[in-house]
Amino acid sequence: MRIQFPPAGPRLSGGRRALLAAPLGLIAVIMVADLATGPDIHLGPLLVVAPALTATFGSARLTAAVGVVAVTAQIILGVLFGRTSTADHQTQTAALFLATAFLVAFRAVHERHERALDRARWVADVAQKVLLKPLPAQIGPLELASAYVAAEAEAQIGGDLYAAVRARDATRLMIGDCRGKGFTAVGDAALLLGAFRAAAHRFPPLPRLVAHLHNTVYWDSEEPADDLAAGESFVTAAVLEIPDDRPRVHVIACGHPPPLLVRGGGVVPLEIPDPYLPLGLGTPTTEADYETETFDFPDGDLLLLYTDGVIEARDAHGAFYPLAERLASWGERDPERLVRRLHEDLLAHAGGSLGDDVALIAIRRKP
Image 1 (cartoon, helix red, strand yellow):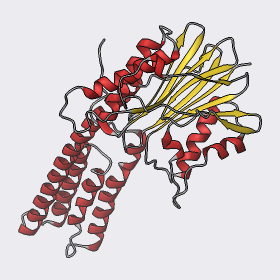
Image 2 (tube, one colour):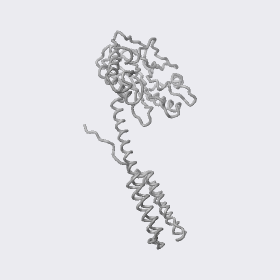
Image 3 (tube, helix red, strand yellow):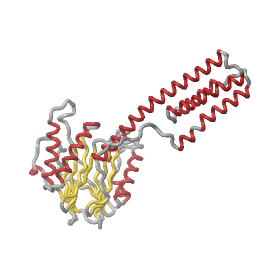
Image 4 (cartoon, helix red, strand yellow):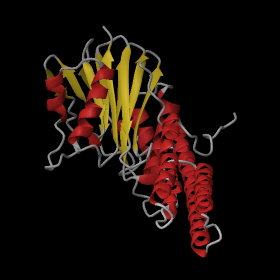
């Protein structure tokens, strides 16, 4: 497969072409003003404003072109006033040329950094699509909608994760939150997602699947590594199985916030009496160490899975986001509309910036 990087270098869009009229117009205005004020007042040095303004939105090549126009305008003014041979005019022209050269060089360095950042963003976007494969709008008898928001500025991926897999006559889902942030959390998320996708479709009993996931994280954290976080990795997670032919949902929660069931005019948390330790903590386990909790999930009900970045989001006064209250007041049953509305409301509550990664999955069994 051939990998194609995003196009290198900025292109002059329609909006930027319109902006180009500003520096060219300034050159014309300065020339007219200089001619109107006569030979005793020199406005030529103001021409440096044109390439400086162009450098804020245009490429190095465009900045150089406007700089050439500005220098040409300075020379024309000198010819019209008959002062091209004076030391003052020659000094002004040389200073304008050097200032333009500096601006072009600065813009060229800036473009190089922009290209590197664009490629990094492109790689992050591809990595997110590989790591967190978009969930289908429908899987079996279920309608799904999901959202992921990384807390790190300019980041596309983080330590939260989700996945859905078809297994015989059921759908298996997982949502989780890796300890910490950065590359360690992303590596743990990739490891766990790979283990889940490889094992879930084979349809082992749910306790055996969770034991496999726990041991995968546990033994990976026990491997020798230079990272100070090695040996301390763990993942809070909820693993669910929803049969096609029975209005039930089977859940094993490992230190993860309970799913919320929107039913009628209220919200019911799927509370686990004794939630298990997060994946990777403690010692190796077997399927005998886990038991499945079963809850009713009839047609029309909506199930929301989320990470703790949702309920721990604070507003300007330090108040946590009231997730259950919001869901009850909205009464939304469409997964896509609910996720979109929840995402927008969460950002508004947190002032547009989240302190932790957020992952959401809304699930409804079609009537």
